[in-house]
Amino acid sequence: ASTNVNQRNARANANPGSGFMVLPGRYTVSLSKSINGELTEIVAPVSFNINYLDNRTFPASSQADLLAFQRELGEANKAMGGARQSVNEIDDRIEYYRAALKGFDNEPTGQIESAIDQLESKLDEIRLALFGDPIKNRLEIHQQPSISTSVNNAVFAGFASTGDPTNTQREVLALVEKELTPVLSTLSTIIKNDVPRIERMLDNIGAGWTPGRFIDWKKN
Image 1 (cartoon, one colour):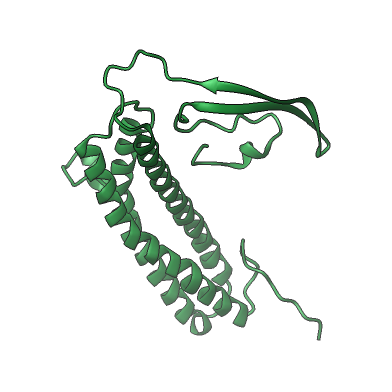
Image 2 (tube, rainbow, N blue to C red):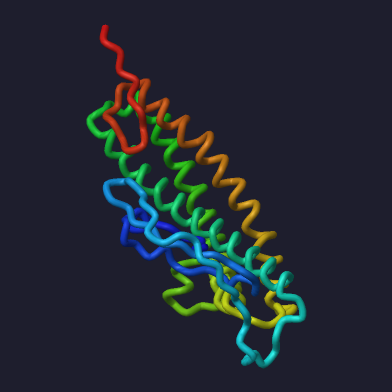
């Protein structure tokens, strides 16, 4: 299955994307139609066999181990994609937070602005770990591969491979897991603690609505 989804995937005619190759074996396929949310079977499940073509230069010594490795790659790629999207969504919220503070006196908003600045600094550190230094990238200054680069390289090299994972591929995946785990932990803390705290502060001063923030209105 694909490790990344978007709103287009919800459409009835959407292509769900591709994933790693399945193991040889017996599978079934069926055909159904969906009209106004009602699913109707057109063709009952039909069984078929999948076998590898005898055209692999270096076939994997264990297909099950190869599939397990590719699944690990898929999980790392999914986690990286989720982190990227979460950072972008929090960035968007920060813009709305700052807009919501306009029109207020400095006194009640100073503490909130400070909290927003701290949140932005944390996001900058996460972005640096995930994607590297953008200035160095533009100036073509050497820097260590970012987590995103490592994930992309590992997925590109191993996702469609039919041979044993190389030692380098395994080392890259282990490095990604080591570096990505603390970043995800920090991001989780931001989502669970920092964002709700700022939004409570906005509620307390009666700031206007911002995306993702529920306004619990009660008539006096």
